[in-house]
Image (cartoon, rainbow, N blue to C red; front, top):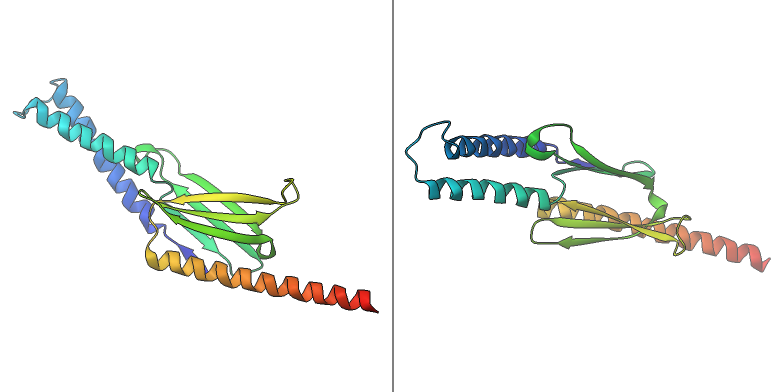
Length: 174
């Protein structure tokens, strides 16, 4: 399964640009560079609303993701627009074989959804590591598709482990 939500990045960049223009215009009005007959309280309310929107967008997590599970490797990549849409995007990416997936968790929060992948590793004493991905725009349909895909991968991993155990038992019995 291949899935991405890169169209969200375009929308977030447009929102960031509009917010930046609004903040700049409000600051110009406050410092009386541009003259408008707007009451000062209205300016601070609009400026506060813009800054609150930027803060919520910053805290909500990564804006777009890409997932690919078609081969033997799971690729999960998340992208976030930089502040105000300026500069390059921030990216978090992980690639690992499907057989290393031990579990996953999906937690819906107030500002976004957190997908936690539990992967086996030899670098840790416990033998597993949790990789969290915080996504801001994840629809119910996309979340369901991701959960179904991870469920099928975990089911096939259990069958592979069961076959391995059965094959080793047969070897020891002879």
